[in-house]
Length: 244
Image 1 (cartoon, rainbow, N blue to C red):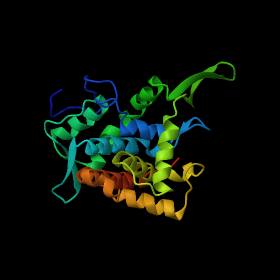
Image 2: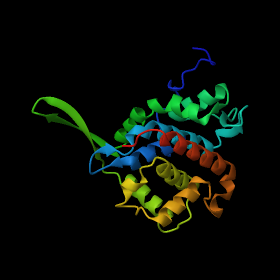
Image 3: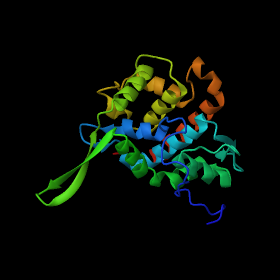
């Protein structure tokens, strides 16, 4: 396959997971937050591939691996920052896709999103943040269920998001992007037990979606702009699909 024909779903061989500094990707954290311990399901499955692909783009924006531009018809495009590929293989697959040429956000979400759920889920299971338990139905039908692992990371992430949306704590750029993506997924009302679905919370989430992250994010002004534009496009894309 030539460079121009590269399939965005093909992974680069450098790394199997995580940022070079060991930090988990934004998409991994988003998928972990979307896991519902009571039911063993992932919230928002119908729109999940859009949201996970948006998290990958947001991660690339926060790390200055991509930037936005304007297409011939005035629409938002994303292009790779030359010479600055990410080390993580899933992030790099998307970076390589936009390195071929600038592409519209909707195109990127549709092309890269469907292949993300399983490898991201495997990473969470490998680290013990989730567990996959085998079970039998009717005594002979084998299936598996997801359970929360021993790690407290999901609870920590939810606490950070709650602090921003409910308590008005100024977020880090990463937490702001995570909260905005959670809101953009349309699943935030399902977290009412942990994050009350109230008018002030909705207003704060809207602010994050628009890129109003607070003075502490000033140094990330470009990344904030990239991420807010991406999240807005995720919301537009997700809105046309039925929710679960």
